[in-house]
Image (cartoon, rainbow, N blue to C red):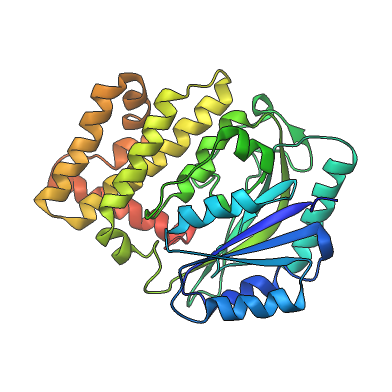
Length: 339
């Protein structure tokens, strides 16, 4: 009998925090396949993971590979997954165990009733270092809880409601039919994981529970602003891959089309503001090139993204406009709680 869900845990030099992630997903029996993908770690990550393999041999597998980055680890996990559903758990994050039980009950209900629900959406919590009040991203209003929905039955997603990887549990076959292959040696590829397969999602189910605990605030973390500023080339690369994908893979459903535009407008705005934050003439030229290239390649997509509210705020003219764009970004950062 196949597992109900495969949990893919990309792990690179994760010895200091991997145990917390694994403790949150082991002990549920053969319904759960845990795939630890050691992405060429130089510390004790593999040794720690092997201890969990020894304790839970029917649940945990360790797969060691040469370093290829976050996307490469997810690709490897997908290739080895045998679960009906698949979810990614980064090695420094964790699940709420009691909530995970509820998720397993929901997934088990889909399978036992023969319902091929393509996407389960759950909430995630920003576990930011030094913050006692935790920000929860939920999807009420956009998605009716505990009901199987088509895209046509969804509502409008608010500004803070965009489906990050942490909120998503895909039916594994959807990912395979999409042919999902994330770029190697590139950060921020979770945006591609969160957007590309949606065109094949016919049914969604929203469970209004706080499953995923998203740990942010480590100085070396990829989403730390100082790190993002050093990796602007990779942010731009992923941004272009997203835009290119949306341009080449149109969808007929009006509400799915609206959501995809909502998502890519946010990603473009973040990239724009990061380039403004860099403050160099080269970075500002790259921001202008991003929008100019999009306008030349896909005028319709350019208009939808550039003249959305968030697109306009992130492209205010002149030095004063750039300061206002940064201020708006910082306010959003404080309100939502992201890094």
